[in-house]
Image (cartoon, rainbow, N blue to C red):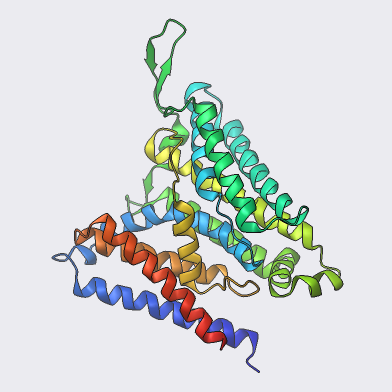
Length: 328
């Protein structure tokens, strides 16, 4: 029987091979050398970071054999809430950021409660949260983008400056060679690595995804583990929403639409099994680099958005079929 470490190594090798194949495509179709410039890859990392942050939380959920369709809507809700608190209410970031993180975490816990306590299928529970969170974003924003134009009592608008926290999150450092949002993504990857590799909760996540009934009989707190996974996914979605608001200098209630699909694609292409019980945050990171590099190659070669979406869908199906073939 193959050792667990051998399974991981082979999964990582396949994920890395996919990334190297995409890099080879970029070298061949380099858009007159644009692919070989660092600023191209810096912008790719900045663009994929928000999706990568969502994929971090999605990894924890998928390892438990679940799915979270609500993360895109939670990005929109968190972006709106953060913009209201920061731009219109002039809250300190030390209050606004924890408030948004708490809101995202509570939404995730709600989804987790529906799955763990009421035994609702994860697809249905998170689909309901997806619709609810999008409606919540539109309700708290009045259906409008929350920008630096603040409505006054007399009906006029007063334009405010973006708070320093927006500039910090949206900044590029180290000679403008790396974006702060990319560092936030890497911090989320590290946190997930700690959870999965060094904490008891990580072992619980794998156990529940591998065999829920056996885990319950072994004394694993199955319900609490699912609550932890979905709550953490909601927390990461709030982080992504804050980054989204800072990058766009506004809170758009429509922000994050279909982001959950890209997050799932990143996790699946990385090699984490949709059946649960197997995967790692390292695989998700490689998946994020693969998707980000592929999208950048298509972008610099002026491939239309329609073709990009169709190609991404085909890649997801191919990755799932490849996983199924490995189990036979």
